[in-house]
Length: 368
Image (spheres, rainbow, N blue to C red):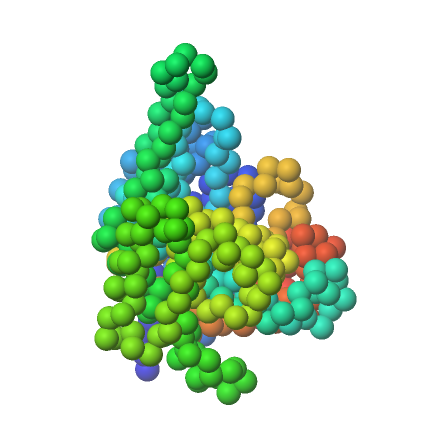
């Protein structure tokens, strides 16, 4: 009989509806204890804008220390980062990615064919199943900005550093190639799936940004031309054209790899193809740690109303498990969520349903 595996997972709800959806992900993990022989230990840790207001820091050093010393993975909810400058504040999730070297943000975007009659079900007509692999540590997100007086005295000038390195570009493209191969293997083992070859689309703007995006483009190609990826098709797409094509023919794409900013924009936009940000998960992945994180924000406008969609956080828990090597457990969660969406009977309002957060959680849990 296989031995049980112990996993120590940190729960970082953050702000807003993060405090409502992360408990849902915890319940989904706990439902796997018997069938997948997993023993979970959970530790609640603070981070977020609320934590900054209370303590003066958005990501307490004790949170990072606990993650590094005690945990194999974490689930992060959402952050209410202000749109205006606040002295001393910076995004805790961006800082966490740097602290733990979580260099890849992996965002699956999948449409589930529904038998329901909701407005969202009617809108989703194409078989979308793609992954956006976003470089997570540099680009404009290094947050090196300055504002200064214009030399001619006419107002101010603001500028920001866009940093692209060959190291970061190589390893994110390498990750994209690995993910494409994994997806191809899953397709080949499922008789109902088409046997398309693995495909990675490199997205950039090197026709304008010849140095920064040019380095990303050339290094990504170098990584994907390694002999181990000989079965992977590689193509390129300028980012503005990529936006057009991902909306026109999303079913064509398999894995898209992009620098930080483009990946952020593409993945949030792609959520519209599958109904809502409330169903799109992500995993922040490094070589020794993974943080599951729903793609939606803190949504203060719906906080506390029991209408937040828990699907993205539950799927993010499954993504976390995949990168922790627990593919069977991850599959059980994905299947339960897909069954809920396919039946389309118990859906939150963002998907055209009338069910509350608790009802959606209950419906998914009974399928795990």
